[in-house]
Length: 204
Image 1 (cartoon, rainbow, N blue to C red):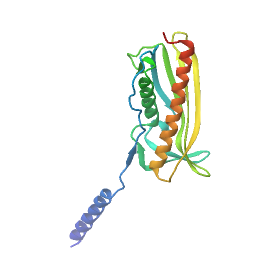
Image 2 (image 1 turned 90 degrees about the vertical axis):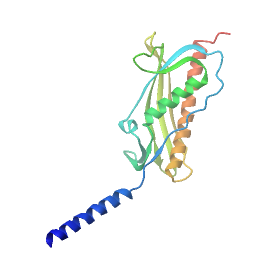
Image 3 (image 1 turned 135 degrees about the vertical axis):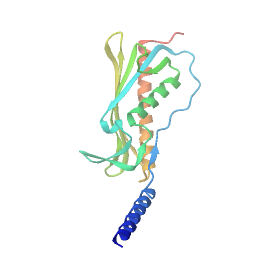
Image 4 (image 1 turned 180 degrees about the vertical axis):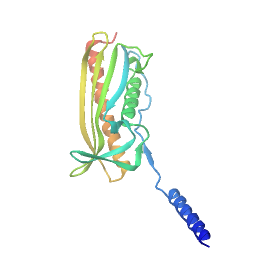
């Protein structure tokens, strides 16, 4: 009799556990928008760019979407994540923007077979929701252009801005962060273009 009761209770607990697992909240994944391919320029700078890995705090090397609770505390959403780490999303978007600009002979990722005189290095400092008087998507990052031949940094740019979030939904936070990132990377690409326009004018 006791054995029968134990088996029944064990079965009920197992079914309850399985039911709980099956009713869990699904994880939603988000990404940034990549620019569409435009009509490429026909007179690029005689430059081959190499984009290194983007550095950043460990939290930005992982996929959770972060929010800042206070000056010294950051939390993450449990059921909302990036499809890839923010540092990788940033790098992919920058490479796509540089390639599609048509301003350079080639743009490649840093690897064992990559070659090019100019190396772009970057660091992501902030990429999170910030709650103060209102909700905003905060992005801060820094980039530099390293001339391998000269052995020195020849250009750098620091970006730090907030983008208002329209609603309290995570999807709205993602949209604000993406818009902010897009604006910052456009500053980077424009700055690089301006540097090469001065240092290496295109051939007429």
